Length: 459
Image (cartoon, rainbow, N blue to C red; front, side, top):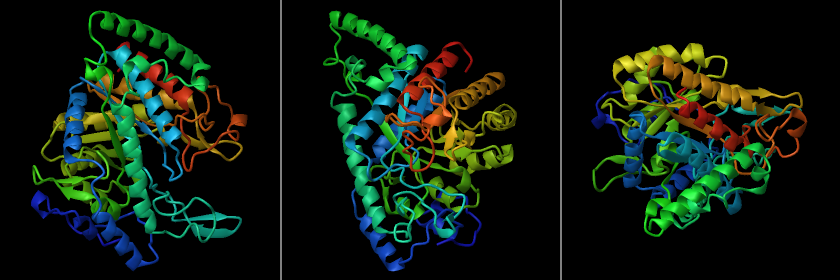
């Protein structure tokens, strides 16, 4: 599937959902049976869209508000979703995101746009195409959409039927999310019910309980004034959008549809897609594909990025300079962001590109603990967020949001935080399929810290 790079025509009329095939596509699996792969894609292309173009346009409008500093983006969810995820786990992940959004909204006074890394985050880029364990070399685990995490020859063979399973799992997850967010679970009067026992027992959970008491009093006051969740829909339900890294381009192409209202192309696998740090080459297939779909899109920006490269990305992905179209997700590391980010901010500010700036404080702060587990420390995560806000303050630009890997499950994968996870705890509940995630208590703790930075004018 990997092709020799070719020059990109700048005119949008030269784009099609398959034009990415003329460019170098990195991080694509080597499917052993081309005919089975093609048959799976043909079947996938006949399925209904998972999301609708109008919903993606709504998200673009909301992100335009983030550009103007009138809203804040909370993008969060699993590192790599599993086909085996239970309904309870999906509910609990949503619950933590809703709790974080309540904290941020209460302290900042601005709407929080909620976007999940969910209902499609099944693929993962890898630094190597193979993995060696006890002298045995097998294909790397690339997420459940490609192969299985079990280390055996049979489980690691890329299976195109998994593309269809990914669609079905995403569809069922979306149905569940819509039921929760529109069916009463997200009612603001339920803020107390959202607290799980392991969160309530932590310092951050206790702080959340106190906040919930204040919100409950405010709700009762509004009810006394005749304003209830029955008369005001905004109190009873929330808008919740989905996103994932657009890594497997054949899967994304198969779910790309022409909007009947506008004639424009939308990738209907999610409301928002992003390009990863490993696949953001300006002459690469991922940039080529996403430049043509009209979804709001993101691009990860790591410590090696130069102002010139980022400006090229902006020109390629948002030549019309539409607010809300492009989100730049910065992931540089706690020790590098203060030095590396300012020249990029200045270059984009001077160019006039309307960018949503988001901090991903997770990916560049990963290290290996003494027991061999990959982990992250809460204080490093917080330090990168603090540095991100400080740099924006000094440059006169707007920090628009945070992008986090978290779960509602009571895992022990990241160190520190309100749950006080230490090295010896990592083996107790280390459940991630790839990268370490914040647990519920750590997530709420971080929401309070971010809210304080925003409220105190440090953002």
